[in-house]
Amino acid sequence: MTATTGTDAGKAALAARLKEFEGKEAGAPEVGADAVNQPMIRHWVEAVGDENPVYTQPEAAERSVHGEIVAPPVMLQAWVMRGVRPRPATGGNARDELMRLLDDAGFTSVVATNCEQEYHRYLHLGDHLSTSTIIESVSDEKATGLGVGHFVTTRVEYRTDDDELVGTMRFRILKFKPGTGRSAAAEEDESREKPRRPRPALTQDNAFWFEGAREHRLLIQRCKQCGTLRHPPRPMCSECQSYEWDVVIASGRGTVYSYVVNHYPQVPAFDYPLAVGLIELEEGTRLVANVIGVDPADIRVGMPVEVEWVDHDPELTLPAFRPEK
Ligand SMILES: [Zn+2]
Image (cartoon, rainbow, N blue to C red):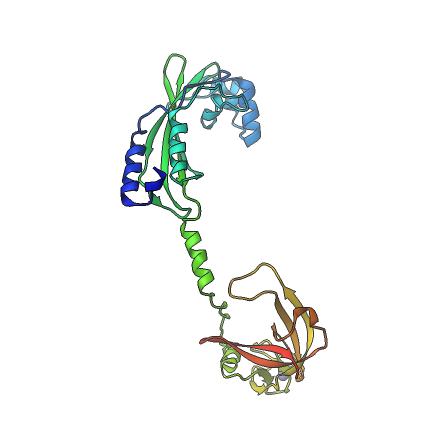
């Protein structure tokens, strides 16, 4: 079987074998250890914070439409769950056989995808449940975000001792081949082509600065009224409140005022370790820029640096600073 999976003939042969499981009993019936009872209900509603008195207070329950204590419908599974009791040795069953078949064909990973419950009536104290489980469907091979795989849906029927159907649960899992998902394919793409750096958020106040950078000109905004230089760009002078401004072109020389070396988290557009400096230009303003051309361990506060233009892509040029020659 394993040797032929992956080919169309292999897939068809596997699909045919998987279909044979539909309608089979998944395993031996399960019998609830305890009848529906007040202590289990009380623990359950306390754990989930449900204060509806119809579950725990006999007088309130008597006045309700139910006329007596009822169990929260979503507790359905609890009444038959095996818990930590060991499962009796029963030899193989259809579910185990199906899982083994899928494992052998390479679908070794599993994830639960859906659980739908239907409640046919409220459960009362003393109802004693057991279940039977049918393998309802096994899908053809599907491509999913996690990988290629088969959905397996089982239907569990909950019945009382006098065979009344009180609830149904459909439980769906995906058995898939690890490493075949769309996310794995996307990661491969990323390793082939480095993504572009994030774009700056351009506004009418800062666009001039990035346009200057594209022309390899390091601009500093200057107040037309009082001559104060400012960076980052903003519409008004903080000294004299004037909105009038022009620019000066910086020499590109400065010193490292402060810096960090970023190791983590690693964003794919950048190279690590990533040295980021707060550079004080000789004109007096400061700007944040990468520090390059030096081992990050050798960067020092006060180190003289000079600008080097880095064209990251056709749309984005940014200044970086390297130790002065
Ligand atoms: Zn001013």
